[in-house]
Image (cartoon, rainbow, N blue to C red):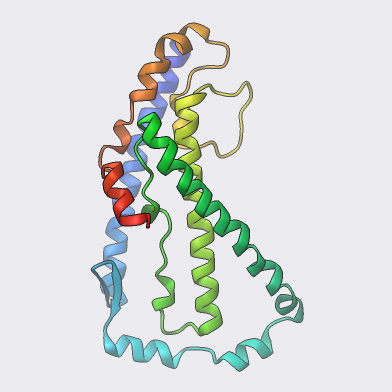
Length: 215
């Protein structure tokens, strides 16, 4: 019991530090907006005209960009961009899954727009290929994070048990799971944990999310 109390205390301190970090990162982001002269209007990035002109003047031309690229990079492009097929399939299927199953389980829907952010193509100092790369990377990495949160909520509902050995980069929900082998806590607390989505209370209702994000 003493060890568990110590672990819970450490986790609570980590949560406080994480919140302080989030607040500081947000403050720095606001500062950077002023430094680089852009604002967010209705979800879109808007630069001052003089800044956009300066950015365009720094852009590397398309021909120069391709000429200077290593041949291996060019030849590997079909492999990289071919991954759009499984990524798009994952996006479609996991969104369909949560729209159907989360409603049945009464799990709050994960907001796709919280994870998939496409905005780096607004930078005028990027050429067409660089913008395409940034869109692709933003989509791919955001999609994986989005899918991870969906599967993490599923795990919290169906199998909230910690593993017998440590795993790397475990998702944040796992800290609330029951200890491996603790049958009494699992049986007594499972239904309560299935209903505890207090960390998602700031999110919109499932039907509203569906209207906004699912055609």
